[in-house]
Image (cartoon, rainbow, N blue to C red; front, top):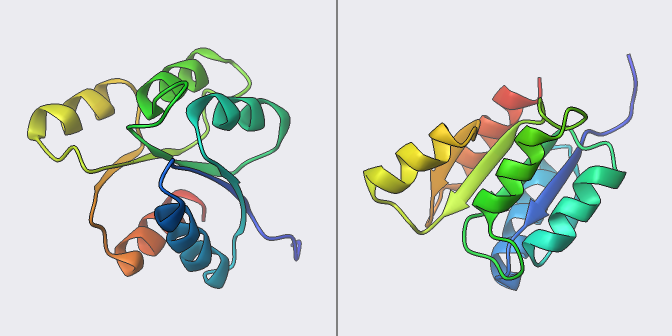
Length: 124
């Protein structure tokens, strides 16, 4: 067993959301690396060994759905658990997220406790 904390990618163009998610996950025992747009998130995903990614659906450069598609198409990343975090709360949006390969779809505003439970479920 290792003392290393699981590494999580958090990508959102809203600094407050990034700070909140990062603080919540850090307190829950995860190390967090942040990105403020989808292009940076994808670059980080390809160079770091993340155990999970939390992606906002609406971001500049590449949106969360685009990043998710690239992750699922990359054999080295295809199994990475991805949580989509979005204010887009229509059932159609949620269905599309799951169809693209999201592990979970969390609607904003979200419960920090619920998010922590989902992350712990996906990164045992």
